[in-house]
Amino acid sequence: MNIVLSDPKTGKAFGKKVEVTALFLNKRIGEQVKLDSLGLEGFEAKIAGGSDKQGFPMRKDIPGMARKKIFIKKGTGFHPQRKGERKKVSVRGNTISEEIEQVNLIITKQGNKKLEELFGTEKKEPEQEISAKEKLVKDSLENVGNVEIAGDAKEAKGKIRR
Image (cartoon, rainbow, N blue to C red):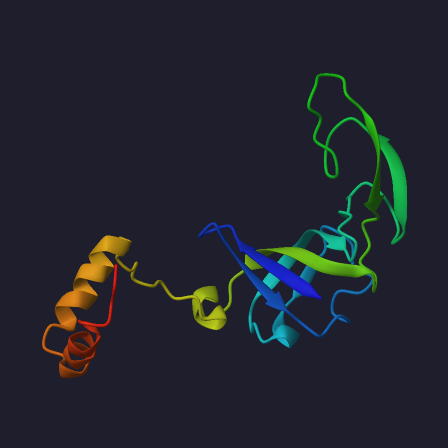
């Protein structure tokens, strides 16, 4: 099962694959969950939603665990393109079962460490991108004093025909 932790203070989201699904089973959207068993000591989160193995989203207003077909005009599972458009779509209920593949969580209580430290996503310095031409020039300048390349070029000088 995948969990996606959203931190409302920083506006960042962190993903993690977990094997402990018993923590979330039979919980509903909107319930509080302590994340100590996932290695996140002191953190608490609210279940915001999720999706099943086939990608169908969970809806807060549908009770149970089963997948159901509902007729909707807006909201989770359908975004209309025209005014007044409605559609029959398949969605999951608001209770987490074994079929749920992803659970979305919103952090409500912070622990003693930052999420960036726990997930190992510290800020990285952006690398300067160089064009292909600049890269060739750089490589050429590095190989100016290289004797092996000069010897190969000297041997191939008379053998190449155009």
